[in-house]
Image 1 (cartoon, rainbow, N blue to C red):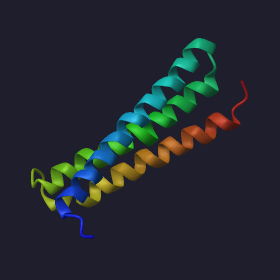
Image 2: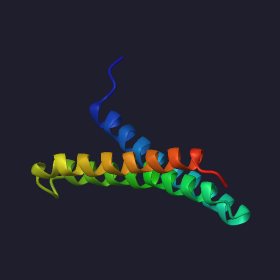
Image 3: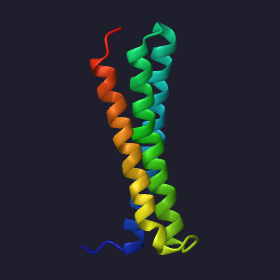
Length: 103
């Protein structure tokens, strides 16, 4: 069974977009938990989740679409990758900090 390349590309785009939306929703729920309980660790957790899922996925998604469509030059691929990895690292760092911070 051969699946068309176009169908696979659309599936990749849909999954990337879905991950961005779902990750942002999870970060929002963590933020609501912070507001409800006024817990500083929960605040750091929500920031970490937002950076890791919403911002990093969003940057990767938008960057890949812009690169694929030729709206930005290919020379920006590495800086976009670096920016995405930076957001991922910061997100994981915030999450780790939230797990070790005393309330």
